[in-house]
Length: 93
Image (cartoon, rainbow, N blue to C red; front, side, top):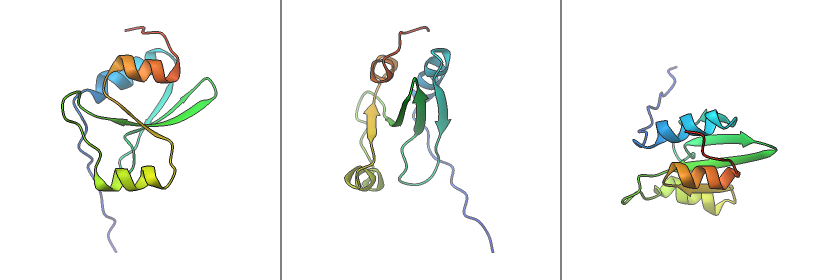
């Protein structure tokens, strides 16, 4: 029996967003399963699921839309500023 391995395509703006969130003290766990959001974030008692998209034209996949319909608290962000505002942190780039 073999395990299926997935190599999720990461958006180009994900790495700087992750780096900035971590500098602010957030715990960041990348998720790489089909249909799952990109990141699990924990910060000052909040736990959030973030989907990172490119500022121009990033759209949710069908699996991501289905997860949102199931009531998962997934938030889509396009920039560092949006991610920081979401968790209520100061920009410490």
